[in-house]
Length: 303
Image (cartoon, rainbow, N blue to C red; front, side, top):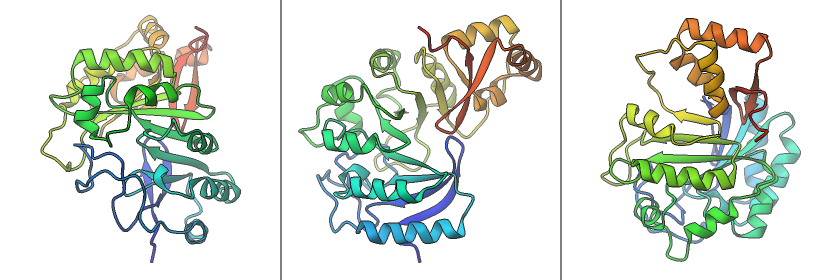
């Protein structure tokens, strides 16, 4: 019986992942997000009766001995994982046993202004933080945090991460699905400079009566995120594929790298051939960013 680990599950954005739940018995989060797939609950500051590091590590070792093909170990929680009081010790232990696997944490980003927590996060290969809004009004409406949590401070403390940083934006119909909000988010993202931005909408039944944003609208809004690799969090594929010329592809990659998922689902066969020719001619390059493949111009980061 597994008390703390789950999976492995195949993540399109990260690979074959083994999950670790740091609050398996009860939701423990300092947010009460409208879109949360967990049951609504009053925000809290700590995890009640947290499991010991030894218990978690023993189970992780046992699971990894069975599932040897796991590519990534994901620290998560039935809530917010950075509320776990022994996170630093746990991360050190996981790093000592992970071998060739990567370590990922999924956090709402609320605690990054705590220097000790940020230092712990920087020991993790991939840090994924949420940023659904750039305005305090929108933030409080969607994420419903504890009163003392300040969005402006969070954004400031998201800057200067010394590890691979991924920012996730989750769109909710009628709240943060407006162009002005995405432009505001893009403005702060240019300051934060994450390695990757993931953008999507509600995928599972939410805690509150809110609705997802239509797929076409998610695609439209994603285009307001500029000069950064953007990955669309989505299940369906678009109907129309584009016959991009080499020049159009090069111009596109000058403004925003395209993920392998984008290539597979937005590019026609002809466009894919053009992309491949540009790659063979060393006009563009292909890189892996936190497990996702992106095509970009060779000088994209030199700006």
